[in-house]
Image 1 (cartoon, rainbow, N blue to C red):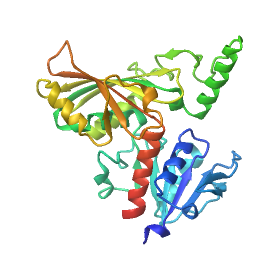
Image 2 (spheres, rainbow, N blue to C red):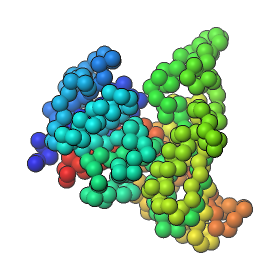
Image 3 (cartoon, rainbow, N blue to C red):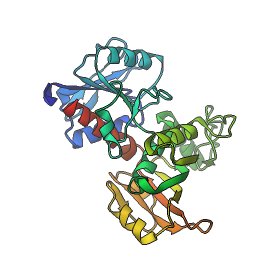
Length: 331
């Protein structure tokens, strides 16, 4: 089957990552307009989307027919999406789950294109999951040190876009009201104001004190790094629209040699070094920026560093496009 006869199907046009994904697919010429199908559930009415100077209609997810020539990207979740995923797999399509529809299913391979893309060849099913954006930034930043890792502690500052398009719209409206001297409405789902705020958690706390997103991040990293690497994580939400920042405490199997570590990271795929990384500098970029390397004052085998990236473009859209390209070309 030639790559030109394959079809890419995207489910979830109303997702925050949809726009960046469409941009990356067009920039990298992964597919032509004739190969692209866009789907949304019947409860949503979405206008046609422009791709490669063509208007692509948004079709009904419930009425769409899947086949074995397709790669299906799931940007959204819900009962209708889960039913469509089952139909797509039954009909032989490849599925790339970006929206945690397969969370906790160990039969689904977790694949980061720059970290473990070889697992596509041995996947148990024609279903793969993309790591969360938080797990992706950590995996890329620490990939050059993978063989030396013993423990990783993640302090992730995520932007509002990590919560979805509705949260972006809510913060924009709150910001406009506050600039005009009005009181901003509290987001009913989160229970806090998003504009000009920092949240220690934007989800319900579980019995462990973690949120589900934090445990998902931990689970993803354990699957990527292996069970021998201990992982813990905290996720804060900060009042910016795009760009995430992760402060990492990394315990190594040997004493920290900063110059050696710096050289390994400087040569890492998709990595760029900076003395003081900022999330703003990463927005719109195709790389993960790392810096502030220093030895911990608590442990001579612990390294502390900072990593920043564009959470939608770099850690969702580009990773997703790369996996889709591999599947369209080789599988």
